[in-house]
Image (cartoon, rainbow, N blue to C red; front, side, top):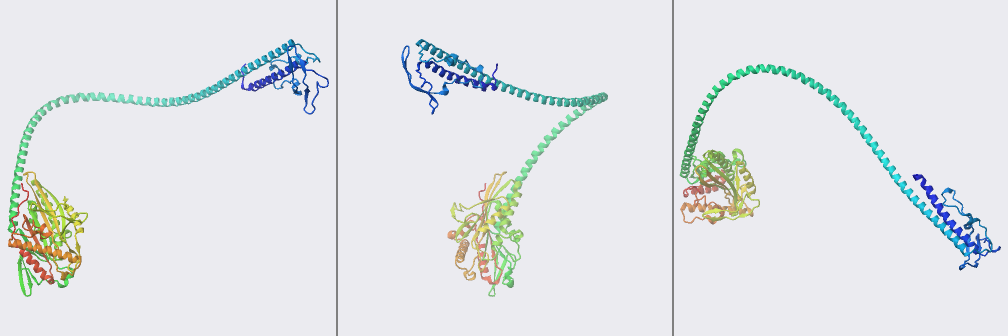
Length: 624
């Protein structure tokens, strides 16, 4: 019989009842065996302590058959002498054995002392019975443990069965889902089959039509084959003609190649002739410039300013011709001769036209210097720097001319590179107008040439690069307001344009320099009313101009020593004033008002001395 969880409580209750029964009966048997050894009296045998409810048995010393024993007084509860009742919850069949009647129902015989063998026999029987009870208890415990293990095993089996049932349910649901999907797919396949059957039918119809077309094409193929035979014959004839034409084309290519080589040789020869002509033109131009004077002087009279309109008269000046100017003072007239005299109406373009061939000499390998001279407010900076558009001065017009000439000479294999620098001489010190910070520059003279090692130089790839350079230099140049001029330049400005040229055909190369100098204006302290820093500036300006006049006088007198080193200005200009190989043009600017006639006359006298100065012939530099 398999034990189930519902039977476990009853088995455990039976186990507890057996244990209680064994314990109770063991005590009862022990007392029953000991009763014959007790001496009883009617008064003391069943004396009961009313207060405690116990039977008090006095101690009695009685001899035993094989030994003397002393039983001490003991107090035993009355309830322990009674026979235990069977548990109502435990079936009688579960009790391992019944209590022998001889133990409970044997009458006690007073004053009867059992024999030793009888006592020992009963004791042994009691011990044996107790051992049997313990053995049965052990067997019951073993059976109970087996039943518990069997119950646990059955519980696990039931759990596993439940899991199997759940798995089977899941598998059944999956199978049902797959069956539904298979049925749906079967319907889709049926639909596709019907569609394919329709397509097959359509294809069969197309095949029938194609077969008819093939039959028709076969007929046409027969016709075309006959035509192809005729065409092949014509092709063979055409191929022969084509091969003949190819041979003629090859001959024409050879002739064309020879013509190309001849044309290249002719072009090269033409370029060489052009280069030779260009060289002759350069030499002739150089001779023309030299004939006009290596130091040329022109005079420009600026127009009246708006604030000078009230005295807008030039009656004190006369212009006999385009090369002369006369000055009337104290009823005396002095006339001065120059290369050209520009009146008040002369435009910037008119002035630049006078020096155009001089600027072109820079591209021929010659050093050129253009200097503006005159009193403050006479228009030197306007002549050199100018404004925008038609008011542009000599510097921007010279750069534009150089870039135009560079493009024209490109077909003669000339390559030109331009770079520009801008400096000023302020209080007899040299400063870089293109530097980020204003600092003095050291000027050295090495190998007969003036050098400024730390001067900044910027490449000019277009005329626009020059305008950016001029913006920076205008911002950094020293200017101030005086009574003679509201925006007077307080320094001498020098723009240097270096040209490097190479001819890839003739392997010629040279370098040249165009120097354009805007001198500060000469002035008198009494007239300009300057003081402090302005007075110091005026002193250095006049001193530098005075040293320039001394250099011109020394050159005019052909002195052995020319004082170039007396000022930084003349040291920088020595290449332009006779020591070097430069072609020089000086523009003397004049103020038109009669109030400045004294300064105008001094400027004209200096200009006349300069025009009479003779310097050496200009030579090309680094020519190969």
